Length: 76
Image (tube, rainbow, N blue to C red; front, side, top):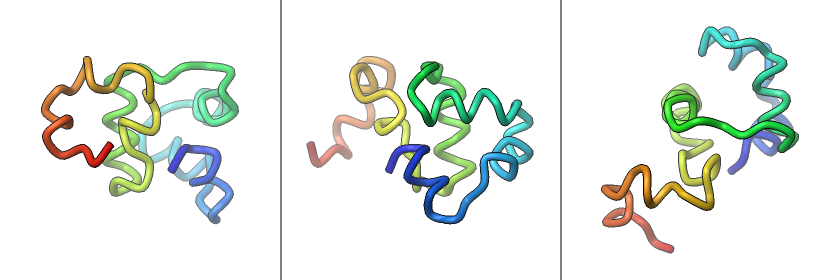
């Protein structure tokens, strides 16, 4: 699931921003696709959403280069 879907399922930008200690505007930009999500923040979002939004969802083009250990767990 991507961030846009996560927020449309009743989760709030403000709530996740508070949990992460990040500006809500940053998460809004990432969810709209106007800003990318760095590796560290991708991992933090995965943890904060209990895996609902995964690193692979946030970085679909290069996750396998950043986290090669996920290849073994990938069903793609």
